[in-house]
Image 1: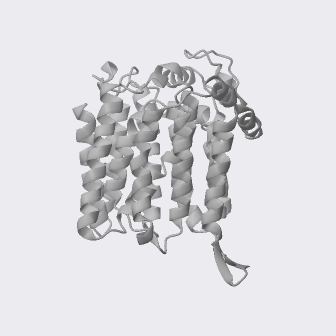
Image 2 (image 1 turned 90 degrees about the vertical axis):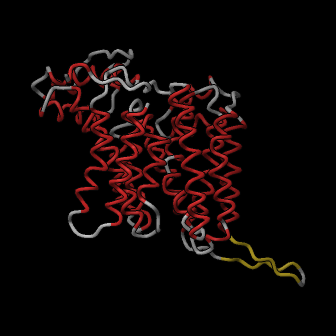
Image 3 (image 1 turned 135 degrees about the horizontal axis):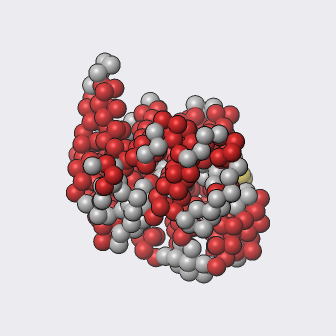
Length: 387
């Protein structure tokens, strides 16, 4: 347990120095901040994260024994998880093959994979910081508490999530094509990344310039702010789709080429996860209390809709873990939202809120990953082949 926390602290300290320094030397600390957690991930045994043995290690071994890419990519082997290799997304398969050309060790595979995930996350935050004032080390601490251990298990999906997360600043720059290309690249690592299209649509609908329409009722004039109206409509629509009937959701998932996930959802339909809702409520409360202070920040509407939809998704995760996994594409935006919302408060209140969320997220990390061993990453075990 402690090796995780020590790594997180030193990584955040390095990113703190990067944030405060000027000149080229600061990029050394940026590299250190990314390198430390990636190196730790690379040193882990194959029992840390169930998917490592299920498909990461088997594909690495398979790729290391192949000399021709075409023969490798068209292989018909069956992985330890029982899935056919042909079902693995081609982007990830190609990624592993390229790594195996450098070295055949599992260490390099895990190290480069995690370096990519952490690197994309940090780059996204650095780009976001150009437009919205946030604390980089605080943001990364939130990531480590909420998603690092998950990334040691859900490897392909974590790469896809990191790509979409890193691409989000493209939306702030009105670079729609670049964001859509990023979604396509992400789907090459995990098909659930098609959820990025929903994020894209929500952003376009909620962040574009709002028009205030005036409607007259006799002598009274009612001003309608379309962002509030659209936000409420979207939340209501998602609630109806999720809670009303799985027969509504299945055609939508089929349209997104996620039919298999619809079947899993149907099996778990009607099972609620109250604990997952409780975990997310502090994020919603922070946004509500920060709402008036974010008067000129239209991202608050985007955060609100994502947070409520994430809560609705997590509420249905009791019967199907796949629903929770899909919700990760939404909840990872807390890494942008929480620092953004805290920064609008006065200095003293901001420090108190940061401490509260640090303690809260640390408690969550301990409860989920240490006590419950979620994703089977604690205790940390080094790969014996390294020594």
